[in-house]
Image 1: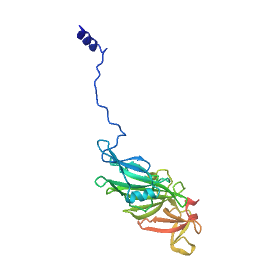
Image 2: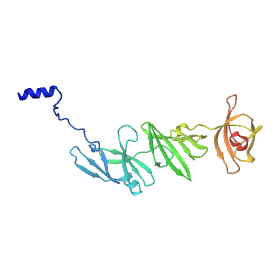
Image 3: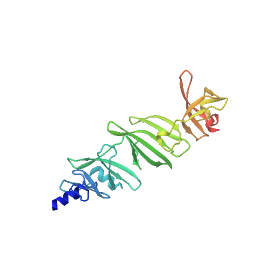
Image 4: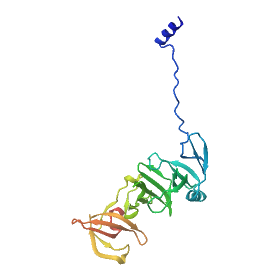
Length: 261
């Protein structure tokens, strides 16, 4: 009779039977044989039995901590699932380290670029952006993953100004300089084009009245702005491409361009 009543209740959904299921492991659980951070400047290694031991920073990591890069964290900077140790200073600049599981030591990660620190970094896809101030100007360095490492491809200076000076790098070497527009995101910044407003505009080999050449542009000619100089009046270094596809790079007075109108 009792079994009959139980069957009746189950059939009508009035009685539920509990089934034991395993709970997922905590997301905060330490990864075995991988370093973890348990204090600002402390690293430890834990095994499958949750037995942990401290790892003493040595060589370049110890030097970085001694120099003030003492705020340690683990970050997947390459977006490949393998976290790297990041040592960050109070000013927001960082140094990056690989962990050798066999020797349980750290080695610095090199960035191919201009030799400047990586500061206030953010990772966007396969690119890493470093932001910092230099000589009162705001800069953004953009690195791209190539051959398994980050290489500098663009350095934008005077971010937030009307015009941004852009240096373009190829395989770690400076390959071009130009002026770009001032959009917030570096990928939306575009080369600046201006037209000649003077009836004719003399071209100069340097930003100086004494460097006039025999070349000139005429009203309506379009030029790309590459650089500027305001040490002796305002000048622009421009590139002009003729109808014959001949490229000319010279200096021109700002007053001869529509951008200075």
